[in-house]
Image (cartoon, rainbow, N blue to C red; front, side):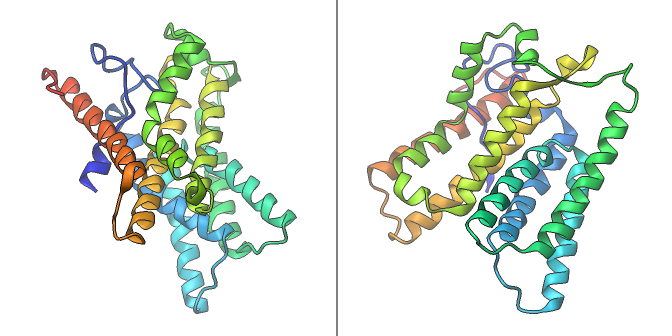
Length: 275
């Protein structure tokens, strides 16, 4: 768990720790983002349970999980709505897919534990953030935030790719089994939606430079890292933890992210990095 908390996207440089690598801003300087990250994993797991229906043992259990989900969604969104705006569209796509395939969905948990609390909280956040159009507004524009910081398209693409070395390599090396893991694939879908937010949406005026929609991809990547670790643990536990070449490569990729996380902590505290 300690190593998981240290993981960070890989970066090309450390001279300017606030404007480098994946999605530009260091996550550590945003207290609200750190608070939100406490809730994103449990909310994502509850969302997964809602669409891949598992029967509850009793009515009390159903009510408890629904109330827990609604509470976590509201707390998460109060800290920052970043993850929720990627989760909801992905959740809608999965529900649509399951309806077409005539697969069961937990409508109670989906509606009262996720859907209604999410809509209410997002409407509240929208009014608070964009109630005065003269102050700021939501706009569309390809990579506007990144271009404002002098990054070109190829640069953004390259930095995004090196930021997902661990989850991408682990998925490709275990593609046959990874394709059957619902939670891992759902996490990839949420991450894909988050890239749409970070790449095509921005705020007007001075808030353009804040890159608030960039936090969406950072939160989704956090969950993707977790789901990849969970998948690998389950996969190799069934094989008595005999890693093989694929497992070793995945472990090395994970350790690279850990080392970069330590490197950024050192850079943030102005201590010359040793890794």
